[in-house]
Image (cartoon, rainbow, N blue to C red; front, side, top):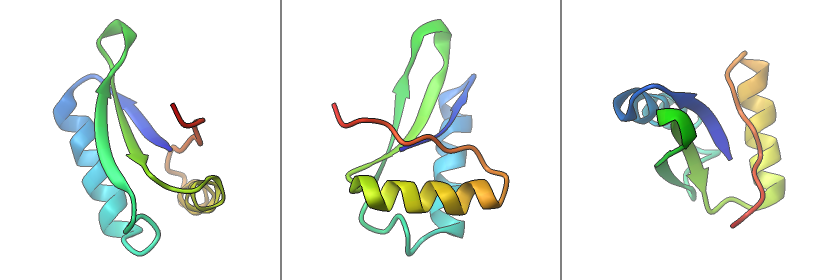
Length: 74
């Protein structure tokens, strides 16, 4: 589940902390990760959620006007 793409690794980590703080119970079992992407962007992601859990968290984030996208496992 991706919660944003940012110009710096620091901003991506800040987003992970923000989401974990506001939605702690929903992402308690997920591992936060920052991955580099094409064009120098950094993706803030939570890994290890079931697809149902990821969709539930994304719905909650979007209700608060926060970015979220469910990704297929790699």
